[in-house]
Length: 217
Image (cartoon, rainbow, N blue to C red; front, top):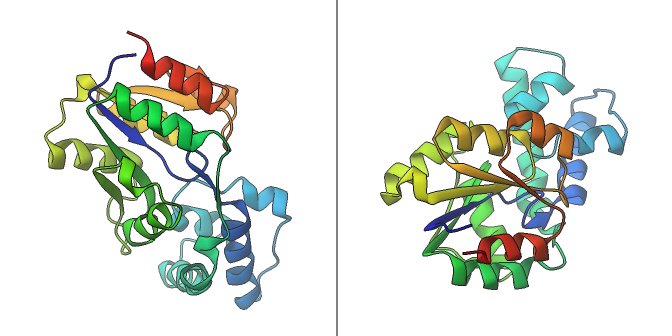
């Protein structure tokens, strides 16, 4: 697959954030005195923006309660949660191949950019990417379609020459909304069913399979 620009999701695509995210969700709910679901249930919330997640977990549309939950989540995340994370096996080698196949690569994540930049740098992945793009802390661009549009506009990337790579339906839908091709990865937290229903162009089981697709001429 020939592409000038590759946009990579972060959580569930480059790194496995489960311990940190689940731990921070549990911390916030515990601090609020709210009954907390099992870790398996909390795992389902890896990927979507926090405001939507806490609206569901708290069963509320009360903005002040949701913002307090986010404040508590970020209190733990900024200190320890963002480091409770690991790069998926095979991803560093895949990124080396991807960098040879594309002109430029970016991270495009719904996670706040201030945290995403620290994670990418902490794991030594930053040299692969021209820029790490994420949401603002106030919620701007946490919608993935808005974020992808912002990346394309900011970098002057032609949508027809770009590919969005991620593990959740939101990545695929964001790509489609912007006229960008998509690759869904199956080592993260989205299922093949979820990605196919969203209209993904290609599915890859492993980082090495992804590298092979990106290297095809």
